[in-house]
Image 1 (cartoon, rainbow, N blue to C red):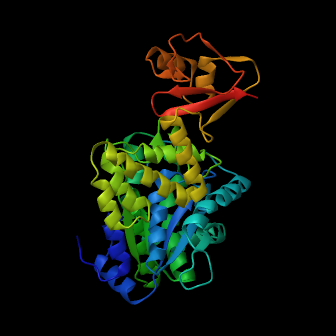
Image 2: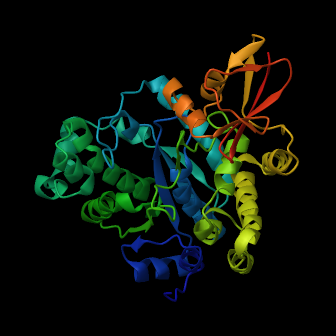
Image 3: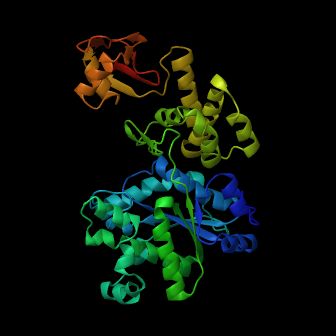
Length: 408
C-alpha cells in the first residue's frame, strides 16, 4: 500500500476507495497543507440513488471525515441530456418538474451522510443547471469547443461502446462529456473546487474536465475514481433479481434494504464493511476473519451499519428484529413486505406476483414447480392452490424472501 502524507488519501486507501488518481503526489501534497474542495456529480434521473451510487457518495463522506469540503453536484442541467456511459439506449426526456422532484428525493441521502453547514468543511449542494441552462450555444462552441477533438471523443468508452454495438448515439448525448468537463471548470471558478470523484467508468470525463480547466484558466485540479464494484460472483453491485436496490425507503422498504446487505457473499463482507460503513478497521479485521456460520454475525453488523447510515438506526434495529422473528422464531415479523387482500382468498400465483416474488404468472408457476414457494413454512406443490386470508399468512420464496398476506 502506498504511503501517503495526507489524512485524506490514507483514509481513502485504507478503506479501499482508490482505483485511479490523476496525480497522486500532487493531490497528496495539496490535501496535507490545506482544505480541499471536492465534488461528485449525480444526474436526477430517478427519485432516489441506488446502491450502485453509494460508493461514490461515501467518497464525499470520507472527504469530509478527513477535514475537507464536499460538494454534491446535482445534474439539473445534464439530466436534460443524459450520460451515455454504460447505456445502450437514449434516456427518456424528463420535465423540469420531475427533475426538481427527483433532486429533492436524492437530497435525503446526502442529508444523512454529509454535514451541511456554513463551516469551512460544511457540505454544499449545487445544481449545474445554474450555469448550463444559461450557456449560449455559439459562446460554448467558440470558448469550449476548440479544446475538444472529435477524434479523441470517439475513443472514450461512453461513445465507443455504443457505436461498437451499433446502437444510436444522439448528438445531444455526444455533448454530455463536454458539459461534464465544463462543470469541473465552473466549480473550480465558483467554489474553489480542486478534486472530482467518480466511478471508474467516469475516468475519461474527469480527465476532460481537468484538461479543460487547466487550458482555459490555468488551474491545477485533480481526479480520483473508485473501483467498479462487483460482488464476489462477478455480478454488478447494487442489482438484485427484482431490480435496483434503492437508497430511499419510498422506493424500497427498510427490511428489503437490510436483507440485501445481510445476504452478502462471505467473500465480500470485509470489503463492504470498509467501503460502506464507519466500523473501525481493527474490528473489520476481526469480523472478516470469522469462519463458517460465525461469518453471519459479520453480515448482520454490515446490514445494521449500512442501514443505520442510510435509513437511520431505528430502521436497522426494526429490520434485524423482523429477521429474527422470521428466521429464528418462525413468526411473521413486523417489517416484511405486505400484501393486503380484499377477498376471502387469493390464488398463490397472484400472491407471489403481488409480493414481488415473481414478475409474471409463468415465473410464479416455475417457482412453485421448483419447490421454492412455501406457505406458513409448508411447501406449495399445486400452482392452482388458493390461500385463505382470514388471518395473516406468511408466503416465502426460497429461504430468504418472506412476505405477509393479510385481510384488507
